[in-house]
Image (tube, rainbow over all chains, first blue to last red; front, side, top):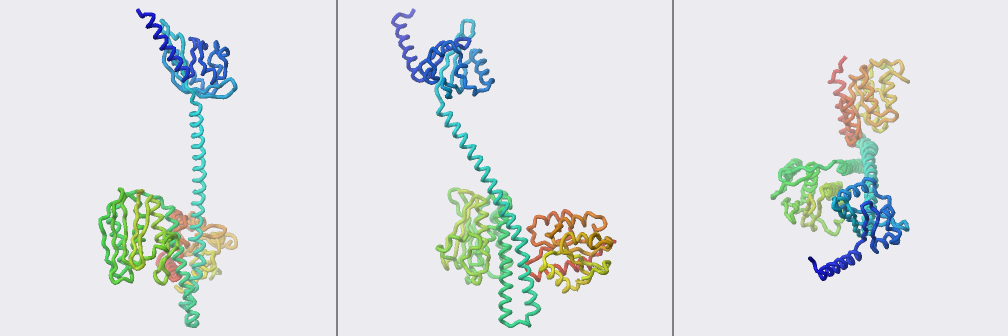
Amino acid sequence: MATVRQIEGSLKELNELKAALDEHAIVAITDAQGKITCVNEKFCSISKYAREELLGQDHRVINSGFHSKEYIRDLWTTIARGQVWRGEIKNKAKDGSFYWVDTTIVPFLNEQGKPRQYIAIRAEITARKNAEAEVRKLNAELEARVVSRTAELETTNKELEAFSYSVSHDLRAPLRAINGFSEILLSEYASDLTDEARHYLERIRNGGVRMASLVDELLKFTQLNRHSLQRLKINMTDMVQEVVNELKQGNSRSVDTSIGHLPDCDGDPVLVKQVWMNLFSNAFKYTRNRDHAVVEVGCQQKNGAYIYFVRDNGVGFDMKYAQRIFCVFQRLHTVEEFEGSGVGLAIVQRVVHRHGGRVWFDAAPDRGATFYFTLNGE
Amino acid sequence: MNNITDGGIEILLVEDNPDDLEMTLRALRKAHLANNIQVARDGAEALDFIFGTGPHAGRKVENRPKVILLDLKLPKVDGIEVLRRIKGDPRTRMIPVVMLTSSKEQPDVNECYGIGVNSYIVKPVNFESFASAVAELGMYWLLLNHPPG
């Protein structure tokens, strides 16, 4: 038998526990029928009802109407079975404002195993729910913005396609006229012309031919965007060998090429080949005036990424003038010094970027150039 | 150009661009293929000629040209529609049709193959190769290829 002292001690402990609970939580006790028989101070202050207004009522008095019938039915069947129910509930205070509570309802059973009363302990989570709602709203806005930006981009892409179609069709027709008729004049009426007239005519024809090649290069560049990217395993050594052979076939000049170890990579074979093709043809072109032209290709590994490079001992260039080297039609040499359209490196950069890689260079006037690229993020 | 004796038409050239037209005719002339050429400047005119309708009413469809050089982009009726009509009619289906296009880029080029074009020339901006391509094709279809019937 417990002594009075022991009982007094337990009571004191229980009262202290209740005081601490009242300090922290919203507490309500209902009978088996759901009538409120007891509420604590916090319940009154958050619901803005006086205790007298709550006692004898059921919880419908603070029903917000937010939850589905199924949700509430699940709550009741759970606790009526004698099981604990946990969940989040939105309630309505007397002044019509809403608040959210994280709720635990514990049923207490009588000797027949039927619920005798329920004790509900709640903590207010309105701020968290509002923050969650805000996050959801922001996410929805972001989503909507992405959708609209994507639509804008698609429109831009369509315009670009229409533009390149127009370039390929409509700009070619007048070019054919310029080139065709000046060609006829040169081949059949040359004897009727003075040397000076012939010279100017040749300038017109050369301009036309050059413009035609620029239009072709520009088209190749815009085609890159339409080519859908494939990721396949590429044997870089084979690919580079192929590119070098192709270039050497059309070139009687001797270029000393050294191909280092090139690890395989994942990428689009058609596009990656264009990268090598453009870098190599540049290296070949800009070493043209060297007695002993050397082009070196290799790969370095850094932070788990493969950095491929093509190095030449050609004319190089001043880094100072090189910021725009990857832009379409940007050149560092005149057409008289080195022929070219200024599209090759733009293609290189576009391909590399589409693979999620990076391309950069290192050069000095008369001391060659090195171009580096990666095909995957570092 | 001769459309008085329609039985003798060997080449129907359908071209709207005056510059391209002049250069094509010249290339054909240089290759001695310029006899009996009929020119149409848009798709509708081409169809009228081929099917003997409109200004060409009374012309017999059976007097088929030996080859049709057909520009892809044409006013009124597009080249691809003209091709579709030619290849869709048993009376004209066997006429060889060579498409003249400004570039391989044009999305319709593949469609032309689907409809049954016999070949196509991308009009090169370089005149000489254009001239020789026209001449070769004209020669091929007129002299080497014997159209059935």
